[in-house]
Length: 340
Image (cartoon, rainbow, N blue to C red; front, side, top):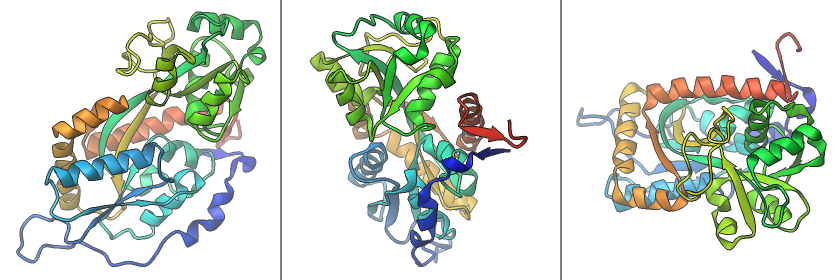
């Protein structure tokens, strides 16, 4: 349906074959004939280094599952960084009959393949559950002359290049898409904006605080500390409702822009999972989201409950991929199959 421009193909593809390791199938039919359940430790793959959103989701989930006594086997968080997630996805995809190997996921499972950075996309895996959602926030330094989202739009209408807006991900990734979608919905050509990518939201915000860029877009929870300190001033959040960590910040919709963008967070498994295996994990993660420790920790992180079971999550992923492709085409980063 869509193809990436050749320049967008990630170098990480060359190392995908090195990412998978041979292992046993893990967890087949139970010997007592009862319902399926894992018969060995559950691997929960975070397809990134420690400290980021995927790692936080994996470790928070593993901790709640074990401390709540919801699993008989231990949950082992395994970090597989590289290629924007593609190394971790390859690790799971190349052991398709290992139902004890899962991975945490979010919008890059659609964005990275669309940009040519992975040979695997969401259709190559089994959706298990969507767990939570976080919103993006658009911010300026504390002494910025830009007073509101409407003020930002006015300046962009005058000259989109005059406002430099930092993000913590490469062109075509979450921050860029969240910005491009918002300005396009406000009537501005998204290909004309001056998006400045940095290596992570922390660095992008540091550049804004230092006055090296005019604005920054990042996850709402990631920005909460610098908002509280007064170093950054939020203009709007991308959710349908206000973020719990930024309750005084209006949504884009409140500012008259019909656009929302969620950093949804979920869990997926290998492609060859049985209905019984999926049902086990659906029940497991449903129970996890009902634990008080999960509610307390996710509230502190600024995550909103948005649980979906496997079937609903699968449909959501299909739509999310379509929506992401439309935005990426609008900003000129991918073409459709006719080369447009």
